[in-house]
Length: 375
Ligand SMILES: Nc1ncnc2c1ncn2[C@@H]1O[C@H](COP(=O)(O)OP(=O)(O)OP(=O)(O)O)[C@@H](O)[C@H]1O
Ligand SMILES: [Mg+2]
Image (cartoon, rainbow, N blue to C red; front, side, top):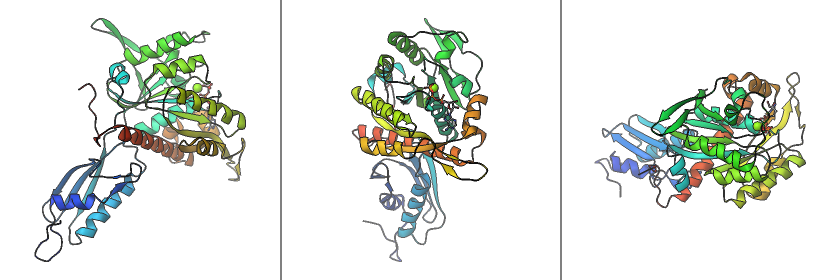
C-alpha cells in the first residue's frame, strides 16, 4: 500500500520510491532492482528524489535503459516530484569457488580466451577486451598463458620485465601495467627469441605461479590468453585455472569453426561455463568505397553459437588498423575509440560482463550482490 498525501496523490517517501523501483527489471538477470539488492540508497526531502543504483558491472550494456526505467517508474507514481536523480554505480559480482578464493583471493572473476585454431585473433581480442573493460571503470588483469608465442607484452607496448620482491618467506612478482591493465606473461620467464619446449605440467606450473606469486591486488576481471588448440596442455591449463567462464574466438571459416566446436567440448568436459563466442575477422569494409566484403564467409560464429546453445557475444571486422595497433602496442580501443570497431569491442566486453553477472547471480543462493572473499 502506498501512503497518500492530502491531494490523494502518492506521498514521496523512501518506502514509496522503493515500491516504484521494484517495478524496474534488470533485463539480463530477469529480476527487479529491489529484489536484486541494487538500490543502495534513496534520499528525499518530500519533493526531490535521489536514488543510487549499484549494478553488477561498470560495463553494463543496459546502464542507460535501467536509469531511464527508474526515472519513468518514479514519475508514474510521483508526477509532482521535483528533480529526480538516479546515480548509476557498480560493484562487480564475484564468482565463488574455493580454489579461486584460496589462490586468487582478491580476484572476483577469471576468464579464459581460447580458440581451437591458432591465429584467429585471441590475443588481439583478449587485449582489447581488457582495455575496454578497464576504460569503463573495471579493474582488470591479463595473463598471457600462450606458451607457443607470448605476444601480449608487445600488443600492450610493454618492454620491461616484472620486478620481484620478498614477501615474508616467498618471492612475489609485481605485474607490469599499461592502459590501466595489470599484466603477466609467460614471455617474461623466457629470454628473447629462446625457443621453449613446454609440456603440460610445466605450463600449468608457470600459470600456477602467476596466480599465487603475483601481487594482483583487487581485480574485477582476470583474463587468461590461452594457447591455441585443444590438446593436453590446454586441457591441463583449464583444469588448473579456477575459471568463471571461457570465451571462444573463431573466424567464420569452416576449419576455424570446427576447431572452435572442439574447444567448446573441452571446456564442457571440465565443467567451465562458456560465456560466449566471438567471431573475429568477420568482414572487411573497403576504406575507399565503403563496400563490405565477407572475406572468410559470414555469420558462421553466430550460427555455431546458436547450434551449441551458447551466447554470441559479437563480431569484429578485419581492419589493418587492428593489426597495426597490435604491432605498435596501442590497442584499437584506446587508439581510435570512436570507430565502429572499437565500439563493437566495447559492446562485446559488455555482453561478456553481463554473462558473468548472470552466472554469478544464478549461483548465489540469495540475491546478494557482493560476496566478500575470505570472510
Ligand atoms: N580483426 C583483425 N583485423 C586485422 N588484423 C587482425 C585482426 N585480428 C587479429 N589480427 C592480426 O592477426 C594476427 C593474429 O592475431 P592474434 O595474434 O591476436 O591471434 P591469436 O589467435 O592470438 O594467435 P595465436 O594462436 O598464434 O596465439 C596478428 O597479427 C593480429 O594483429
Ligand atoms: Mg595469441
